[in-house]
Length: 92
Image 1 (cartoon, rainbow, N blue to C red):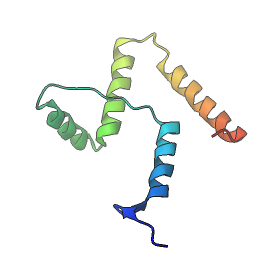
Image 2 (image 1 turned 120 degrees about the vertical axis):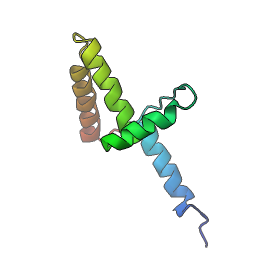
Image 3 (image 1 turned 90 degrees about the vertical axis):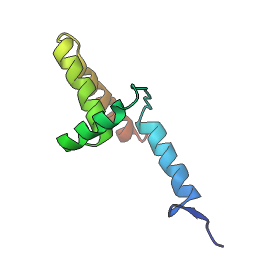
Image 4 (image 1 turned 30 degrees about the vertical axis):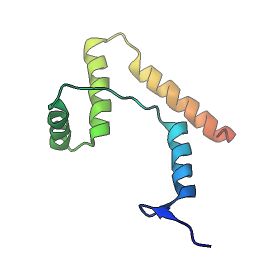
């Protein structure tokens, strides 16, 4: 039985990817002024970062610089601990 592929991926592989992304990531969408996306992407490239990592690092740096009492690091550590506990318990 032939399995139809889309960009080299089977339907089952795409479904598995979607389940993984749903479990491990939150989607965040935003709009920027026309032309600014290219500026930000060029800055990310200049920093040697992916567009995604550039945005994450920029938001974290903004919080650190402007909200010194905000418990960013503690919140990140708590989220990682919770994820590790779920993995140990076999929660999926």
